[in-house]
Image 1 (tube, one colour):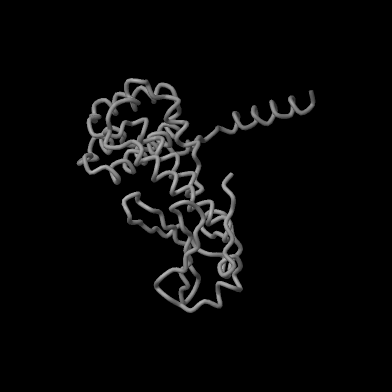
Image 2 (cartoon, rainbow, N blue to C red):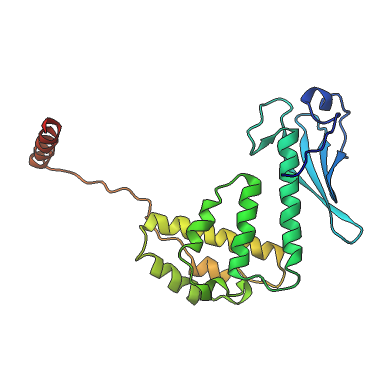
Amino acid sequence: MARRARGAGLETRSSRLKLPVAKKPVFVKIGVGIGLGYRRNATVGTWVARVSDGKGGNWTKAIGTADDFDEADGREILDFWQAQDRARAIARADRARNDDGDKPATISMALDQYERDLEIRGGDAGNVGRVRAHLSDLLANKAVALVTSRELRKWRDWLTGQLAPASVNRTTNAFKASLNLAAEHDERITSRRAWETGLASIHDAEESRNVILTEAEIRTVIAKAGEESAS
């Protein structure tokens, strides 16, 4: 685990609330090429990550709300230490993407990226595992920009023979989210039609069954339950 940096003016809510309201965040260095900033707003403050781009510049991103008035929950509301951890995680994810160079993103890479994004945002990374568990190596290594709606529809239809309809929808929704994230970061992915069409949700998958029992059937159920309780 990286050694945590101190920042006397930002560590506690009382010290932060003494800062003047300003558009420009106050930053502390928390690692090589990584800074954590706090922007004092008229209401609750915002944590901001600043990460060097390796080319003499840097980029910034708001990463959460400060625990100025409410207790930190580790997801939306962060204390100083949690904000540090999230800023470092975001920097690692960005550098991992850059390490891939200009290689076209594959479906496997898209899932890896989405998994990191979920971890950063405190989401359920298990959603990615459900997709991976049912992907063939051939499909996993397919470039996102080249995958077709027919390939994805064939996979979704196969999945309906493995899982309940509601589980199919949860799995395909996670799959679509990973491909959408890849498209947001790779300008070579010019269309999302392949997965919007090929991974379309199954209708009425969440519909509950409204089964009406006859009086005789109800009596039978009650009698069976009584027999099991007595045994």
